[in-house]
Length: 321
View 1 (cartoon, rainbow, N blue to C red):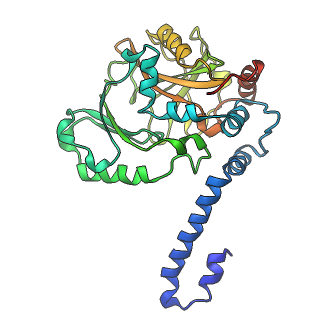
View 2 (tube, one colour):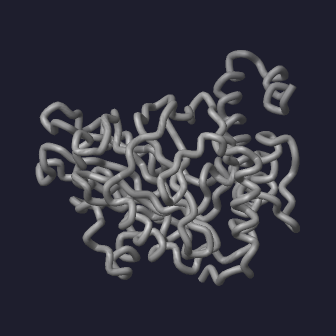
């Protein structure tokens, strides 16, 4: 029995339930304070719940542990800047790659300020600091503007990164951004969603490509490829959400450009995942991810995670700004 339950049993029923809710809110607030001020311990708790053992902070063994060690023991302010889907655009431009950015249609601190009349009939709305919180608008005349604004108002109130133990996200000023809607039908294969080409870069060098397609709320088809687009199903573990593709998908036409751009963007970082899309043979920048699955990836084999971790550690730690 929790403290809240014990206190609730001592109070008359007429006032018990309002007080019960109040005490739960207090408990939630203390829980939030704990997670923020003891996030390293919280990250270790989540890690142990996932894998059954603690993070080896002194001698990390695989990529998951390396990600956690970097996240909590190095300067990750540059991570915060580049994990921000809005501010990363300036970084991409500084690398001479403005031409691969998806056209920006608007950015707002307050969702109530979104002016839908100035947006085209088709567009995408997303939070700049979240993951998967995307609203795809194919026909503006069919949307409920008030519901969309309320959705993002509630979303921006959340401290993304707190519940997943990703501290660099807490330094990202929350925004709503609107981008041009890329044509899902102009891709190399049929997919219900844009195909993600997620390029693992270790010490500034692309190593593998993780392709994701047919993404839904509940699942996504995935597969790992080497730089020559050889399919490596033996490196992956299927889960309920991450389902291994049965056969390799066709090589993207712009793969060589994606690899070139990923190398340019990943310079100076021990590890980072650089994501792209391809439409009509042209690559588009997606995002940069420094804590894939919050450093608790369970969709790769332990051998592959160890291999990637060793590649990061092979070189002396690179400056992370």
